[in-house]
Image (cartoon, rainbow, N blue to C red; front, side, top):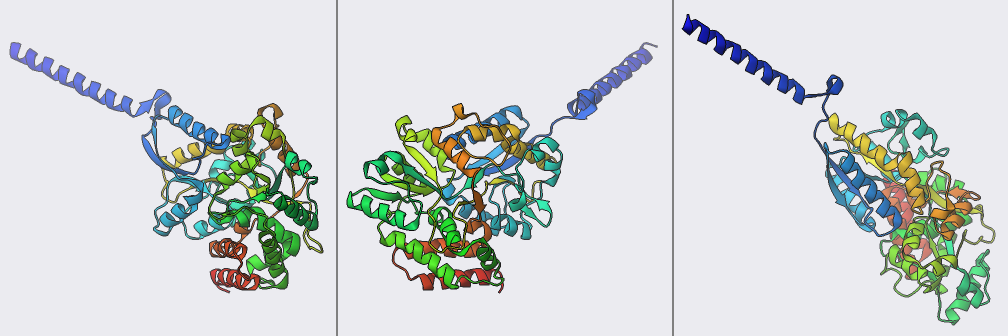
Length: 441
């Protein structure tokens, strides 16, 4: 009897222990409401917000807050300086090894990565946040859309060809803001005679002259319709006389001594610092410069800055009241982010480009293509001026947003060669050959 009782007690204890273990196991996989607990996920994130400008600081702050708010998501972060970012990304893309979430450029990069099966659409994410989707300005998603699939939400708006000028320097030398090509050449001549750098240029990475000067200058000469045909190799070619003429105008700037010595040896950040410190009368740069200027220029220097469009070209086919520009970069979703990793990636993308991020981006002196009311007390005077300028002019294409990667590289390298004395006709042929070959035409 005693033995039977002992066995019964032991069986009861074992059942209790097993039940408790089972209960603990179930509890570890559920949270309140029987919802599966947040699964531990590791995401790779590549970005180029490495600078000291307000926009970069803001984006790094958003990433840090995301990590705090999502302890179940571990971020493996690669922060790569802007000048080397695209090269690094294209290298891993060629090896078929994409990061999970990364800065994606619109236009040719989106198209090529999509064609290569390297990225995934984010329609599901965008459609799940109706108010966010409807808050973007018209056509904001166009440059990230391929065959009806949206591959990113823009995180900014980038006019690329703003003519920044120093009011104090111009006035002290009896000059007004140049509105025509002849007025610009005259200003360059006057300033050179006074040993003042007319236009700061930082073309070390080769894209700046193309994106910020030539895209707008060439549109003034050829008109937008011609460029789109040439980019598509459909009824126009880069060896056409109007494009050679556009290259000739660009070369005129170099021949006139518009830029400081060694302009191919400094980058755009150094160029912006040069302008901010009053070492040049003008600078042709994008809207991205505004955040850097707000961080590094003195209050006095900011008040002396003005902004306008590039001068008109005599007999040009393009609209002179225009700026070349694109919606800003967005966060891309790599092909290998699936299941819980994809869910976590969507949360990160929304955190970096959702309504709150758009507002914080605008207040960091970075233009956005999202409907946010601007509080002028939180931005610099030059930012307010560019903000108003962008809303009163037409936006024209940026060359590297429409060309293939090979075509864009040919323009970038060709402009460096052009400004060092290369022949416009020879450079035009190199650009035409590169674009035609890339398109198989």
